[in-house]
Image (tube, rainbow, N blue to C red):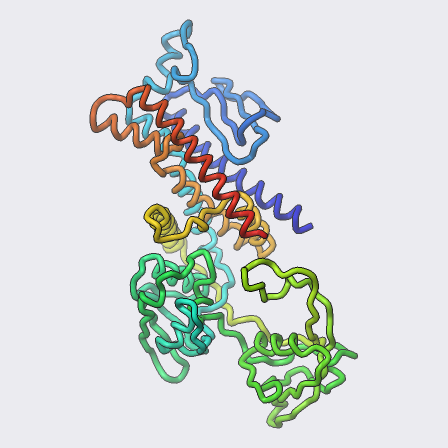
Length: 470
């Protein structure tokens, strides 16, 4: 079922983005008076087609769903002898350079516009998100960034209200601003509200942020996690280990074998590792503190479901035994509904698209000069995996994912690589500057280079996808 949902989510996402992109080219081409012969979603063999409109444009769905194209009347793609002058006037290369620029740029701009519309809609409706209240790991590991938040002065229960002067109220906004700081390789200033004590400012030094993987768990690497509620028992299943030990709904879990537990996650981790072994659980019930002997029941689960991975980063194999006590503990973090007025939502959406685009361009630049790993290049398998995950998480998560991929598609197409929209825009920009079109021979050589570069990038992306999934 998950596989089917992943495939459907991927097809809907990619089909939508390709259609919007090509519609941008199509609509502006029509507006500029250029005749459109075919509109294709997908590449390769045609599996469905119909003709519509005054020009009888052929609307096509093709077999390979990893692209699309708009085919216009173009002298470079066939002999146009015999066509009446009225038709030749609608040929693409006969249009002014500014019209050609508009037609080519319309595809990526349509992707940016789609992202703005999706983000603005989400901001107006409002979505439930975890707040920017954090828990902090005090230990400092060997990896860069580990424990940086604790060293800076941030403590569990702190509410982070701004990052580098940018207000944040939700966990996603906090994570986004931290990623920006990692990419910019600059100090990150945190504005913090500490319950009953006032406001503080702390600084995460750039030296501790260097080397963090922006595609990884940036907040976790810094020692930050979402603040969880106190570990209170919410439900006890009759006949289970918790019920036999005497645990009751409303009990506040204080410690296990004299090891304090800060939240439900910490308690669950201890219980998981205590299968078949008696542990002493200290609880507070009303105003009384009790110690209860609990024997977690062992249960076999797939190793891949557990948080632990082997040292080389591959998925664990087989099954492992974990302890369970048949009780539900409070885990959900504090939530907040983030909603904005229409003007504010549009403004936030435009800013989000701009910042995401700038971040994508910076990442490309850092990969070119070796400051960022080529492992950050992802392809269709990773996109499909994330599409399935976000679809299962809810409509808001899925629409946000589509918006981010739409931005990525727009940025990628604007890269100055021959065969992409950005390559054509480079040619036309040279034409504006020199007053002459790019020589045909030069265009052919650049086209071959562009195809080779795209194939190389595609192979790299698929390789990274396979490594990441395995």
